[in-house]
Image (cartoon, rainbow, N blue to C red):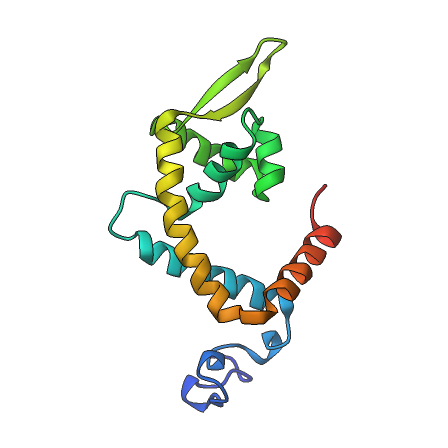
Amino acid sequence: MTATAKPVEDLPIENENDILIPAAFRDVIGYHLRVAQEASFQAFNATLEKTDLKPGWYSILTILSEYEGLTPSELSRVCGRDRSTLTSTLKGLSIRGLIERRENPDDQRSYSVRLTDEGRNMYARLHAFAEEHDRRLDSIVGEDKDALIAILARIVGALGKG
């Protein structure tokens, strides 16, 4: 422990959720976005615990159910994930038989990704869990939902990669 660090038992208990939030982060939007995202992912994952489903698959399968034939680069932009981390997920989905790669006839280095029938079935299963999870989030956010979504969209618009 450094000279300025406080023992855990000396932390003020204003709000039970704030106990371990360092003072430097209490007003930091990015920190709260990340913690909220993690809490949401953990709750969604708990719902899927007894299944063979993975929460990270949902966004990819959803996007591919609406936009068939995206390249990995396009998919990366739409789902907001780095291309390098997306590649391993796509490989796992392909091994699982949930997606298929199709070479671009005009460019052998390029390919697109599509859902298989099994992928569509998996998407339907995940969608049912996601709808329930979203109802939970709606009840937490309440009438502030439209404002929250607008603020988050503003952040993405200002900071997101285009």
